[in-house]
Length: 119
Image (tube, rainbow, N blue to C red):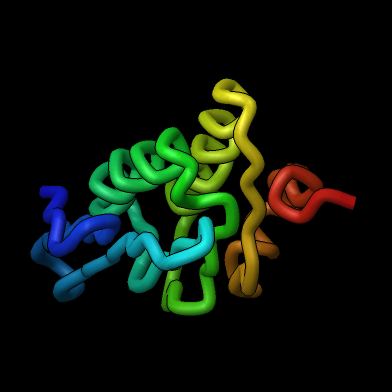
């Protein structure tokens, strides 16, 4: 479910049972900045995908801050790569800030680290 809370603010929230509640959100800030918070897992990334694509397409997200990401798996890494693909397809700039070490390690192991942090 994508919830538009105020102009330029999107939140993707998904919950699943099992190991507890998992939430993630995408928020558009001022100046082409956005932030992602919460857990990037299979259960949350589909909602975030749409919010991120809309913000990237609209030129509202050229920098995405990931400092608020508390956990991630490979689907979180796939989400970040997909957003980069969308930006490239639409000739938009996109970069990530404060990439959590867990995501950096996944990117390194998957040999895609240079996509997230261009040299």
